[in-house]
Length: 567
Image (cartoon, rainbow, N blue to C red; front, top):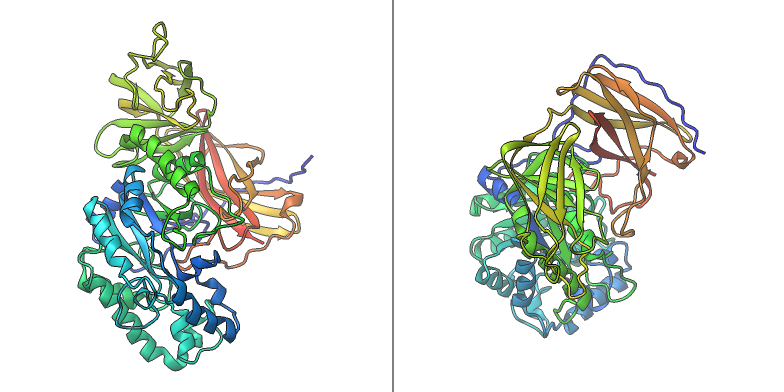
């Protein structure tokens, strides 16, 4: 049995954290995006990321095998891989069609990753697709396919260039201190990057989105992008772009979570584990419930195709999106992201709430289930329906009433729904059903609170904290914390369950702390482990602790923002 030491005290002075943080790190980015472009991203909700490099011929990590490599390895990489790169089956219209059906509104393509290999006909280097057996400009074909099917065009660009630095005398290829190590060539390096950025901004027409995957010269790149294309939306480099995780709290400003479908950005032919279609759908729902956009990565193989596993998951997303698209585009966070396994969004400009009923894998078609919603209150004009189905017909079950209904009770809004639609031939459908609630209002004014950064105070002991600047309409609250081992989505499909501390009752605003002793805390520290955009990169380490404050208000559990301690 776990033993916990617990104390709580009120701290008079409150410190407020900047909105738009994840895992405890603040954003400090220059952002000249036009507000309407960020609004577009918040409306879009779902996009595709394409990582592709010449090292896909080996099935290895994209670019990073060069970091720390021997000069012999680097020379072989540079000289040999372009000679055999010939993606004869590359058909961007196939991939764009998969993305469009899945409900994705834009695609971001890796024009150049850290290795320096360019997928367009650049005048800056010979290390490009034009000097391979394929020879054609892959980026031009990608852009044409996106425009043909009405998807927004996105470019990923790394301003770091391993091959450029190596060919100019920097023998030790590295990411950490990459720019500092390139001190002898920085002036020509800067000109090289600026010229590539200008090519990308002038040779392909309007570029809708630009993703800068490096701090190296990032501000200079941003300046060129906005000078040449003021309407271009810069994501990484200007807004919050958590990698391999979804932030713990709803964020009102535009943000975009980018995540792999498997355990690698590049195509991985062996030892791969893809996330299930169900998990990808739940991740999309969570991102939308928290106000963000989900950028899901796929990786073509050396011939330019997607394998069946990736295609299959995109098609499962397409089946779900075809039914429930109304609940993904043009939505914003509700007053709470979720009530347990029921997640929420609200329609952007109307009094309509969507309730996503998740984690019911064996819901038999034709069966009725009841749910109690504590955050939603009915009005005289309230209407209820299940997306995709009329409720008037349950195929082969003429005696079953498939209509949805609701009842306002003292404990909350009771909804009663039937899974009526036949999606799969065997009548089974493991993915979330979405309930549409029109003309509803919030049932309460929620308390405002933030998880504070935890402190490791000794081996096996952590001091958790939270700040409560506003009580909402509650006279008292029950508060506590939850924690679990930190796992990267590159390694584990499903995170372990949360452990909960004891709850305590508080009657006012302030800052509260809780000292918890647990054997699983041994080995924790507080390192400064950040990603390129100033946030903790959950893929950088698979060990540590993530934690969050929780509050119970009138029986409704509210989950706070998630922070992390790395080992």
